Amino acid sequence: MPPAVVLVTGVSRWLGGALAAELAADPGIDRVIGVDTVPPAPEVLRRLGRTEFVRADIRNPLIGKVIESAAVDTVVHMNISATPASAGGRVSMKELNVIGSMQLLAACQRSPRVRRLVLKSTSAVYGASPRDPAVFSETMQARRVPGGGFAKDSLDIEGYVRSFARRRPDVGVAVLRFTNLIGPRIDSLLSGFFRMPVIPTALGYDARVQLLHEDDAVAVLARAATGDFVGTVNVGAQGTVLLSQAIRRLGRVQLPLPEAAMGSLGRLTRRPGLVDWSPEQMRFLNFGRVVDTRVLREDFGYSPHYTTAEALADYGRTLPPVVDPQLVAGVTGGVRTAVGRLAGGLATASSLCTPRRRPAPSVPGLRAVHDA
Image 1 (cartoon, helix red, strand yellow):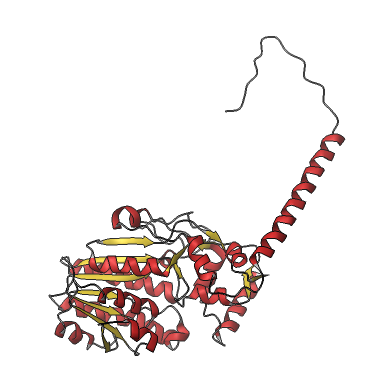
Image 2 (spheres, helix red, strand yellow; image 1 turned 60 degrees about the horizontal axis):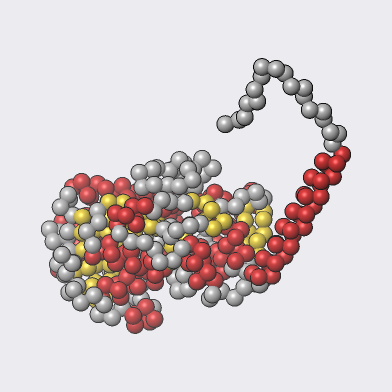
């Protein structure tokens, strides 16, 4: 049975507003209520349709009155901040993420009408370290548990959601662990990183990056809110790209720096508001992270329309290149060809200079043995 009244937190951001607009366009849903601490921007407000905006702070117990008075039966929690600067500092960010989530869950627990809860989580809960497996499945845990920031907050929130599910077994709970989002309209951490004309990277590292297009993210959230899937699911596109490949395809200039300098550089970029990278996110740039999406395709029932490469290309169409990617590909191909010819010439010279060995005499009774 489709939901009657859906409450979406974090509706003033692009993704929350896009989800609220998608749900409001569904005639089977009676009401869509959008909650945030700040009013949506005019362009977001125009596309919300019949969504009812309520200016409220989920850290305040009054959020329970909103849920009770509107007879909300489905809650989609998306008001989780990933950047301390946008939340007013790390302390405010943790209060909004953790304390706000606790208040929201307490309100849901008190309301007998709530029968479905969807949490927008992140694959950052798996951490990033040199000991990581090639692919994370939903049953795996972080090899190195995140010690702070957005990833640590998300781990804590998932723990509170699991406790809520035990206390309210009648509520269907879906936890969506998204990979990095990208697209022409959404403003994400990774899109801000790729907007820099010169992109610093740690010398000696080339992370594998798995992306998700903004349209696929909205479609997954809408299906989770209106469907009956219960459990945890990784949400990411098919395929990966190396960080160096992504930089070249977007026409940016890569600047490899010693790893020790990356921390200082991260602090410098946070001050003017260029890029807000925490230490955990800097580790992601070094080691990358890839998740298994079998549950998404087979159990959840959704296959992303964009692959990682296609999502990156769609974002790149709105980004003026600093260096023509075709020029970079041509130079790289020429260097690769020259290196291949040089290696072939060295191999030929080495074979000419190596003295020929006489074949070993045959011994009766022995057979040749080949490696398996």
